[in-house]
Amino acid sequence: MAFLNPLYLWALLGLAVPLVIHLWSRKEGRTIKIGSIQFLKESDPKQASSVKLNEIWLLLLRLLALAVLVLIIAGPVLKRDGSSNALTYLVEPSLLHHEEMRRILDTLGSGVDVRLLAKDFPAYSEEEIYEQEIPDYWQLATEMDELNSDSIAVFTAGYIAGIKGKRPETGTNINWIQIIPDETVDVPIAAIRKGNEIEVISVSGDHTRLDVKREITPLNSAEMNINEGGDSIVIDHRGKKSFIPLRTADTLRIGLFNDDELEDQTRYLRSSFRAISGYLRIPVKFRDISSEDINNEEDLLVWISKDPPKETASPVLLWRPDSLAQSLIEQGNRNDVHFLTRYLNSENIVEEHLPEQLLDILGINKDFETEIIKYDLRVMPLEEILPLTGSMDGKVDVSDTRDISKYLWMLLGILLIVERGLSVYRKQ
Image (tube, rainbow, N blue to C red; front, side, top):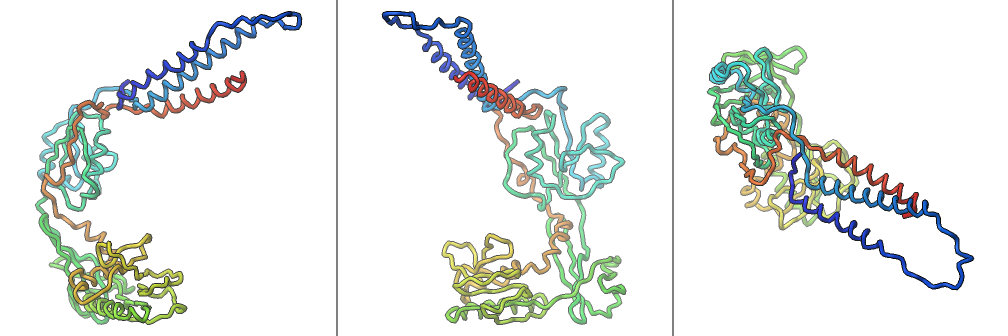
């Protein structure tokens, strides 16, 4: 057994304190002179020895409970059964169909521990077909310490989409090897019907760039066919036929309310929504509302007033000036509540890109973002992917150990129950 925090074992010296107190309290009885002993009752020697015995058992139980508590704080671990692998290979699933990665796997031979760079690190099998999902590199890096291996070699593409959160620190001997896929993508992902035209959204790029394109095509174009249900189209894109969903662009409905002294703020917001309408090529409809005329039909309720609005199911943009805010619009405690944090003017709505911030809270075309990420082939330099390497000096290597703290907690609970029961029973 080893300890993750062996310094706390010095606390075991504290067990001498209750032992010293117990021994110190065992003093010789005092002699008291009395006139007659006829009314004194002779004590039972067996009862006296029983009290002393119970005191010893209580002392031992309390000492043992304190010792177990100290061990728990020290972080006890046990070595796992069996020897660890000398080297484990982790391969990103998206690299399995690349010729260079297949050549590397062929040279490894049999009996080598090859796993996937994915959740729980499943074993690799040539017969299986794996999903080409981009893994969360840094989350998996923190979990690599749990692998029973002396060294780990990681084959990864290093996609930007797989870098999430804070850069982790790991003490495991990990060697990251980057294989950059030599491939490009150019595919349509969605189509939006806008009157007599269809806007086709496509994604193109390679390991250095990602472009989202919008192309306007007439309904009667020979390059596309709309199905009978009108919910999908077959489009001839770059000489390839693609089957993609078709949706109809809805009118952008904005509800507006403002105090008289804040009317100029509403005017700037109207201009920004019109800019969004022109960019997206969809109509925008404004509705001036009163404090009593609130419904749930707006795509966004803009409430520029010092008084709060009534409850509504629509997303809300509220007026709340904040001199410490980092942007013109900031999210509230809910996803559908945002705050306008500063007075608008002709300068800051341009410099801080107010229309882009409004477009973000409207959530238009957000369902396309997941599709776009699937085709994001951009990669990061290897030095930007690597986790921080922590020092293992003075630390226990936990890669082949098992935590036993939960069992000691159970033992501590049993000891406390027995000690309390005995103490109450003997009134000590």
